[in-house]
Length: 322
Length: 161
Image (cartoon, rainbow over all chains, first blue to last red; front, side):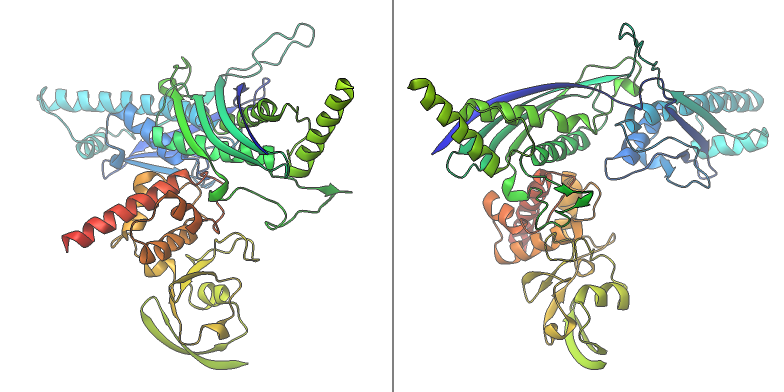
């Protein structure tokens, strides 16, 4: 028999290295001879959109088009360290580093511009970025700025549990509907509604992509993925045994972006890389409970495990009735 | 041992001497330097190495060179580039359907094979068409939307002609 159920899951998650570990992102920006703003930072793009978001932040501070930003990253020869593409930290940490460096450069540009206008006696002249670069050469000033951002975390007090082990925290709430086949134990996720707090959505399309991908990973973690370690050897070491979802397994996903600005974030933004996958698991497990009354206590909730749990429940119900 | 083989690759007729026991993916990547075709699992499970052979998608890691005598093959390089972008590629960009990008050449080719046969596929058709292409980043949603968008754009273009 096929039974349907609904469930929700809510999470909060601290991003960044946390617990007082030095979480530093450095950034260098310069105005080049073509009038482009060149941003150097060690942030790594792995598909999450760091390059896009960091360029957007730089363009916003400098007040220029996105086309005027050249982002140089992942080159240890010329980019200052911006930590790892991990801990959901690049938007918040490196975003802040980029913002601070750009603010410094903007101040320098303003001074060069003012000097130029005063010397020329043309107070109303509007200079292009290329002209500002030329003016800086004439004034023997190198328009290059560097700044750094360190996340404000502290170790937790072991006695009273107080402190700021992470900064900031990100919140999410997901709701799903599932269908459980009580004979085969197969679970199908029918619908998913994913509400994710993002601080400020710097790039909504990228955030939707992260939410959808995160839900897929969370669902896959809950229902399919099993490394099957045996004495340190991975048994399921290929895709025919290690199952991840295909397009056929994915439900429709409704992404809800919740904006509650984080005062310390770049334009209020927070990281969401990892948080987006977490709420899928509790939501699906609660929906399974709603559908067939079993509590899943081991992952993945594979068909054989579900059938076993249902049979156990039926047996105990039978005994109770007797 | 090298033997003669003839086939059409991205609308170009090729007649070459090659080791026919070579996998097609190795021939494309190592001999022709067409590195847009990606190698993922090497077992025909992930679809990263998808190419189109005579109108049907195939995992090029499971095809030997000797099997393609006389065939018409399309790789991602045969679709378009920055200067002459294919509507499917354009739709992937517009929908934000790409994250790390490793599965995308295969996804785009699966989409092309579908749209060549069925110019107005519904959602289920699209899902089925890309079900042999695994993606770890996107959750497939934006890829499905991109293929939908491409089918609409291609239909519009056809009507304009």
